[in-house]
Length: 273
Image (cartoon, rainbow, N blue to C red; front, side, top):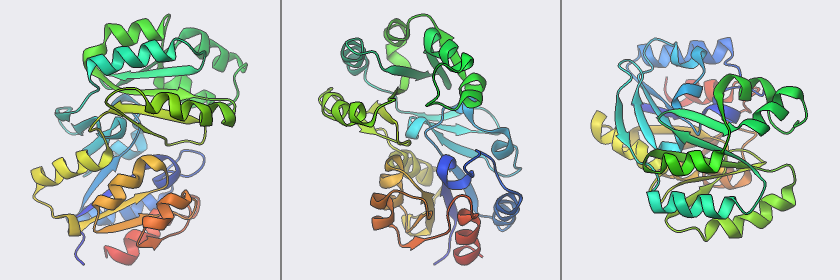
């Protein structure tokens, strides 16, 4: 098998548990790029939340952001594809979520927005089930998240809902699944993520492969969570890191080391070199 494109989830996969890129993994990514392999970021993060240590690697040109809602050219900043939520689905989502008091984030125009009261509670340490430094670095506070969502309903990439209690998360699955024309997925143990009816990392990856003239069998994809499932199924070589959810391991052709063991680097060395 000849690998021409490597699609990489970030959190829990390419980045370690501290959210950092290790020196070994960086070196392997740079080596893959030097061999003419397209290394593509495929993440639930919005564009503005991409870590500098990743996008700063010379040769990484494309990123699939907000679970595939956008394809970004990192060199030019151009959006090559946008697949946002339907405005009517955004309105319905806002109506449903306004009945509850769960922390909600809104992604639009490559940025992430959060209710100011939640932002302040995270900053002060009152909310501990979110990573404080990450939220303060990547989120923009707004007074009314639901109103903001409606105001930008024509360009909503993703909606994130966070839970302090796992039972609440389980109960909300049925509620969110009944919203019209949305996908419901997850990248963390404590969240659900709403996207457009046809939005996924897999759909964005397929579109990028058309642009780059890469065949499915020439793709290696690495992931760990539910929002990576369709992308791994799209790849000729689906790889799960050792810390991946069981549903991801079940569809993987290879299970590599964990994200704290440079599992991505191990898999690339094994199959791409």
